[in-house]
Length: 160
Image 1: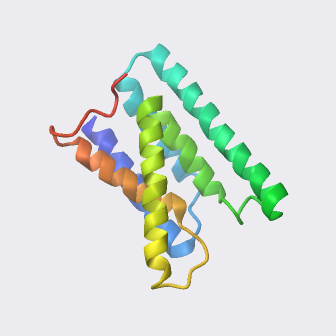
Image 2: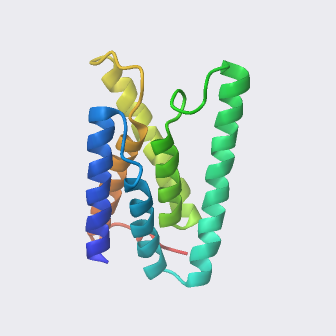
């Protein structure tokens, strides 16, 4: 399990580095991250709950993306993909959804979004950057969560 956590941290570092530097991440990193996170989740739960929770999180992510798509298309009248939300961000959402039970996923997803928003607002004054490296920022947040899970004083991530 420690090796999987270290792999997840490594892939999140790759995502963060590429997203900050290039504003584009090689797509293959996301499925590999999803597999590593899924394996970690599977090792900490039963097969039935893993698939049920994965389906639940996938439906939640799909609903969020659908709402964002409809808002972008009909309210702001902008292009959705690569203007409002990048493909890497969407793939990162699904990788994150595979890795945790629903309650943990919602908490981590919400906290990562708030972290990204706070970081963007604070860094916007320093840089005149119009886009948010969302997958990179969420990757940094996930690194912090996984690193904290190594310590015994933190609550377990896979409480069912």
